[in-house]
Length: 127
Image: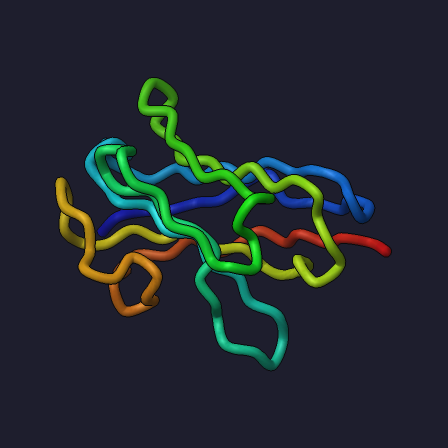
């Protein structure tokens, strides 16, 4: 069983920035890391992902140009830098990893591609 945990959520004003981090048991460098978010009553939606090699990144259209996903293998974490935040970015943010290592899912934006999820961290953007 892979344990995943997010950190870095909080309250920020519109236009501000937050940086989320994700840690997982084992070597983070071997996993594709995905970020999703969810608000009450809505489906969990894709935000961003980074391939296990770090060579490819993927973004939802709603965050492209504002969010940056990266990994720090020395610290064994994956990060989501969120800039120019908007009230509609308010959500619980989840990090996820697939069961397979050293590979990238065919569709990194699909929830079905991931097997292990963190408990989530709340991001609130005030207007």
